[in-house]
Image (cartoon, rainbow over all chains, first blue to last red; front, side, top):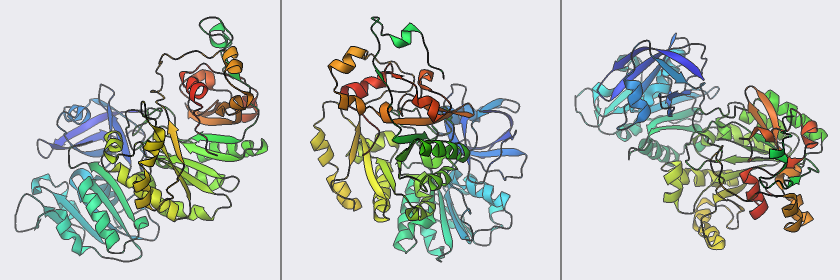
Length: 220
Length: 303
C-alpha cells in the first residue's frame, strides 16, 4: 500500500471533482486503476487520469449518494493523506500493437483516455466520442477538442454546438477497419449497447475493450 | 517450514490426535494469481476485491521456478485461481510458459479482465498442452448471480464461456451449493443457458459449499485420527486434495507452498519454500475448510 498526500480537490459540480495526489513512487500504464481507501478502510478502484510523465496522480470522481469512499475523498484537504493500492488494471487504451483506436466514454469514464492522450501526445485516436448530461460535467473539454475527430454528446442540454442526445446517437461516426480497436468506458448500458452495435457491424469481439465505471441503476 | 509443533495444533480441543494426510504425490500444482479482483463478491472465500493484495500477484519468475520444480516431481497439471487471474499483469505469460509442459486449468469470472484480453488468449490454443477454463456461474438464475457479482455479469460470463468453447478451449462451470438444494434440479436449470451459449448441455458443474470468509472461525466438528480411519476408506483419504496437490501463494514479497487451495489464510499451512520441502510435511486437518473435504468430499480439482 502507498500513503499519498492530497495536492488539490477541484470541484466541477457538487457531484463531480478531480482529486490530485502526490505521485510518490507509483509507476503506471494509461488505463490503470488504483484502489483508494477511506478512513474506514473501505476502498474503491479509480482510474488514473494523469499522464505517465506527470508529477501527480489525477482521479475524476463522481460522488455517489451514500458512497463511503467518494464522499470521504471529496472532503479531503491539501496535505491530507490517502491510502492507495498499487496500480492495476485490465483496460489499456491504445495498447494493441500496430493498431488504431476509437475511444468512447461517458462521464468520468473519460479518465483512462485522458491518461492515454497525456502519455502519448502523438497517439491520437481515429475518433473520440464523449457523453455527459450537461457541458458543465465534461472534464478537460478544451484538451479533448484538440483531437481531430472529437464529438461531445449532451443528453440533457441543447447548446447548438454539440450533439444533443445520448452518445449512442453518434455511433454512425465510427470508422471500421481490421486494425481498429474500440475502447469503451463508463456507464454499463452505453458499453453493452455499443458493444452489441459494434459486433452487429462486424467488429470482432477481440477488438472491443470494456471498462464499466457505473451502472444505470446506481450500483457500484 | 512454519508448522506449529504445539499440542494445540497436533491435538484437538479434546486432546485427541488430530487427523492428517501424509501427501503421496504431486499430481496437480495450483497457483494463486493474487487476491486482486475486478469484482467484490460478498461471499468470496478469498476476500478478493479490486486492489486487494492479501495475496500478491504471482510473478512470471516465481511461476517458472515452481513449474520447473513441479516437473521434477512428476506433476500432471497446473491450475490457477485468484482473485481474478486475468487481473494479474503477467498472467498470460505465466500461462504461456506452463502450457509448454502440462495441461492447465484457470478459474475465472469471465468478465472484463478476460474479455479485454481474449485476443491474447486465443493463440494459447496452439500450445502443446490443453487449456481449460472453469467459469463461475454461481446460480442458474441470472438475477441471483448478479446480486453478488454485479449487474450484467451472468450474461458476460455466459457469453465468454460460449466463446471460449467455440474457440476450442475446454470449459466447465463452478457454482455454489444452495442450502437444502436438489442438486440435480439445480444443475438442470442451467440447461437453457448452456444451450444459448452453444456449450455442451452436460457441461461439468463443480459445486462448492459455503467456505466462509478468510480468517473466519465457523464452528465445525474437529477431525481426529480416529475419524479418518473410522469414517473414511483409504480411497476417500487419497482423494483429499492435500494428498496430491499443493498451492503456491505469494505474500510479503515471497512465495510459500501451501497445503491446498483453501487454507491460505492460516500460516500453519505454509509448508515451506520449495515443493520438495513441502511434500515431506504431514498436513494436519485443523482448518474449518478441512471439514468440508472430510464431510462432503469437496475438491477444487477437476478430473
